[in-house]
Length: 80
Image (cartoon, rainbow, N blue to C red):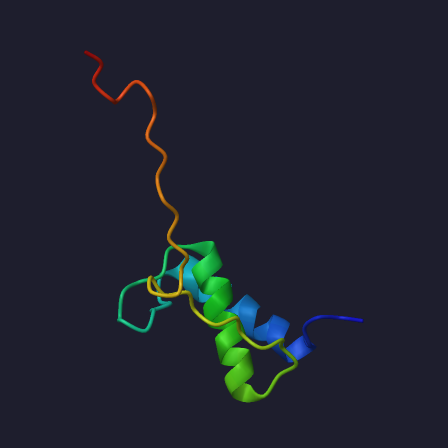
């Protein structure tokens, strides 16, 4: 079974062409240069139109990330 519908692939294709042309803008108004970002914008537009697209994954924030303790190496500790 296909993950995306035809309307979604059209939106992605359109976003990729706009990126190549230099007219694709991100939410902040900056010109998009990243291929991955262009695909994400295309998928977002397809979702808005009601196309068959899986739900977007929630954005990771710094507070939700698990913080791991750094291990100190034996070399950094001063020896007497």
